[in-house]
Length: 385
Image (cartoon, rainbow, N blue to C red; front, side, top):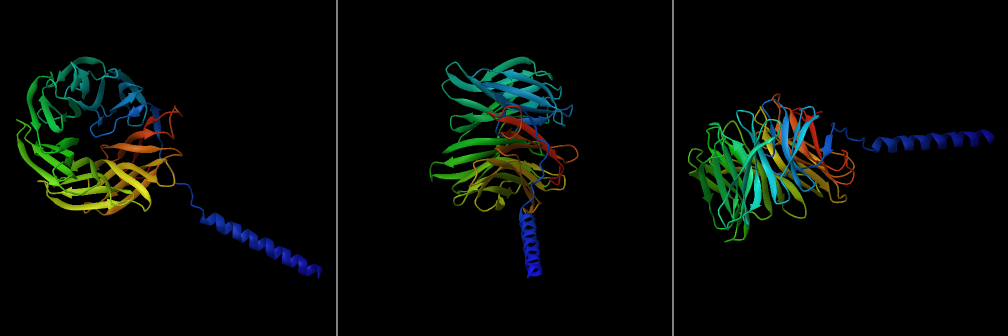
């Protein structure tokens, strides 16, 4: 009897150990995280707020408290300098670099009783050289985007009332042309880029007041004189927002944003021809999660990579979303990265070797545990770090 009891107890212990081992196998291992380089401050939402400069550094716009700031970092994530601009009556939204390595900052300022476009020229160390303003009395205008064009000049894009306004200037800030593009409804430009043939492409959210619908609106403009080449409405589809676009080597256009088909948001990706005719529209995301794409860039092989955020409905915190699609819109990978609090990817830049440089805001990393911080991390083209 004594031997039987000993055997029974041994068998029970062995079975219990096996069960514990099985439970531990079922627990998902923690996902490895990239090295988040984080600094006090906040980064702007929107495209063209971050660039890789001619000396291969990163320069981007953000805020610290109520002041606009410009940050310069190495591509390894070390801060080079940080400069403060403006008081609460103005904001810098976008940045570009001239052929002479001067920096041009575009935004808006409340001056003379109304908001105007603001352009600041700074040297390569971020020191202000001059500021200029562009506006029409009694019409609120806001500069949102700036890019350098292949002819060495600069184009700013933003809003004038409910319409699109574009201003082309030389590097002295002298106006070459100003155009306002009006439609019935409200157009909000989210991205400005120069296409391979030297024309300007504006990607917009468009609220069509005639039919009460949300659409994606593309506008192609002649860079020499601001004349409209073509425009295209992609819609109407309710609950759809666009945030970024890129041009493929074929001239086709790919955009990203978000779409709410039910309770949850999905990452929305739309591909069009070079003249704005829709080829396909696709959605990506997990069940019971809010997910969206803020920034999209073309890879050297014709695929695209998107960053944004992912949020589980059971957790208020967000993760950085990193999504890669092939040229046909098939998912290559969808990674969700971050710490124990909220992290959001706002901008993706492509390094010379096709690596991804992700910039955004973080509550999980950095010097301040009470507010958001700016982060930067990098992956290779396959999303590995």
